[in-house]
Length: 142
Image (cartoon, rainbow, N blue to C red; front, side):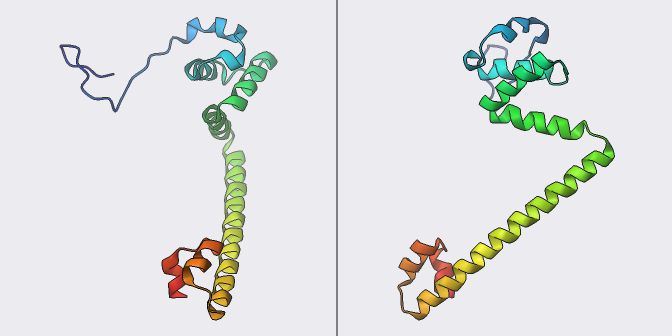
């Protein structure tokens, strides 16, 4: 934490943590469920690039318990790929996101159609909004 000359905190918005990775070998013996989040990150930083089965297994156990470490591992794997592999991965990711977007659009359009039919049947707007999860203002504009 940043402090002034008297030791008073200057800001609580930012903290700098120094990690001594050379002192964490003993953490490999500690059960994953007993590791703190900081200890899990220490193991990630120290062994993320290690190819040994034991360390990979340990990191996999950590990823199961810490979503942020899992995401960091996935990002590291992505940027470690060749340019061609990254391009293929990114293309696949874009395709999957497009598919999800199209599905979400189709679901929303289906809800709008249901809402229009309900409106034609004189169902109150607040009831339509409740059952379709369409905002009341949008229901009113249909």
